Image (cartoon, rainbow, N blue to C red; front, top):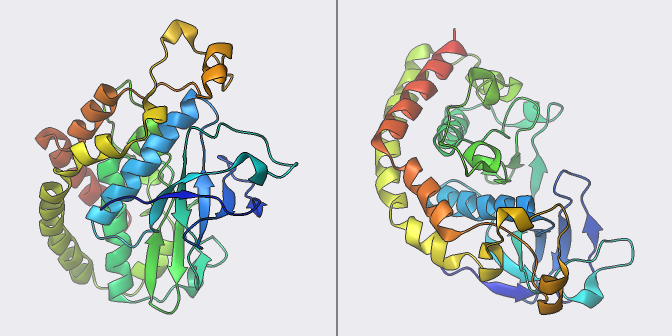
Length: 291
């Protein structure tokens, strides 16, 4: 899919007090987007993960917000917001209507059905595969579309073992997954073990199909990634500041997300040894949490 490139059309309406401090931006397609932006080289890696996670979730046919690259105009950063580079586009997730955040206090509102359990198990398998360490019992990173009875997957900045590009992928532990949560227990409660096993058996076939589907995305992701995210800065030149003077004069932010590093990490996701381990780990954690 072609990712739209949009511009802000009015002042930032809201800044969320979460780790990445995303902002709510009305864009040129007249839709609102929750935008994450480059603040440092570490944030550049997080943006790469957001892009990878969103596109992979779509390929897995998970419910997830549409995305766009958003250039936020200087005039639209209100005084209480920090100023950021205009040349490095943010990544925006389209704001959805009719959804509620799934939290420890709202998970009981999610319809307890076999179909909903299957949705959550599929999301959990996706997380095992893409090494998402940020979806767990304390932080579901899910929304619930009440009208359509759908779980919506959001927030991918901590996939690939929290944006770790310098080391090989590592498996999630039992407690690092949404299977270790009140939401999973709420949906699994009252279900026969044979039903849960049948869902798992169906997901094994889906897993194989999805691996074939995502293989073609590697080059697309590399092509789609904005040049400003890929600007290579030598390690000895990096620091915590967003800009150095030379880059600031060019209006470009420091980052360190070279395409060859991203490609290598994406290929790890398709490695047969990794995918076999993912399935075994998923099943072990599933069994641990359904005893």
